[in-house]
Image (cartoon, rainbow, N blue to C red):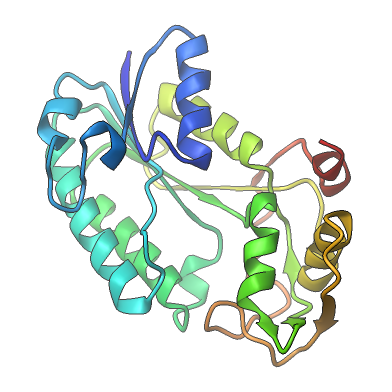
Length: 244
């Protein structure tokens, strides 16, 4: 199959391209660096032509509320039009996105999902929990005066390698026709997870559990970011990921 991976040079996309190629598929990485701009539409029709599947794992270059919403609206709008002849549209989203409307980023992801559904394409939306690779970035966003303040809400962080494996499997399978959730193999408190990563990296910042601390603009309940009981679980836990 010809499978076009939008965002195919990034953290998840590059691994999806590799996995699909190893399985014998024609996996095409599409990104601005390869001449494909989903916001302007440049190069999009050409790269998607003849594709059996389109995988969308692209992300906004800016997480400012207005910027990220504009990105996903324009990018997804162009993609669903370009993918009208593809048999399967696969998109990567976020567990709990529809439960946290105060987060500009998550509002934008919900808008992306709605555009895909409204387009009437055969589709699969894979909602993932936070990537283990994002711990340092979360710490940076929550640092005030050298102290990392995070809610103690539950998280089920998943390794990027496990995300890529599920996305690749989904791309070559039958469309879900809705949402499938994936998460890591263990539930941790967010402050516990981030603290363990910083310690492993010899980062001296203190991590404090603060129930009033916000997560990218929103207050979390205990289970706001946790997947449901039917979620597919990755194999790589925090300890193994740190050892790698």
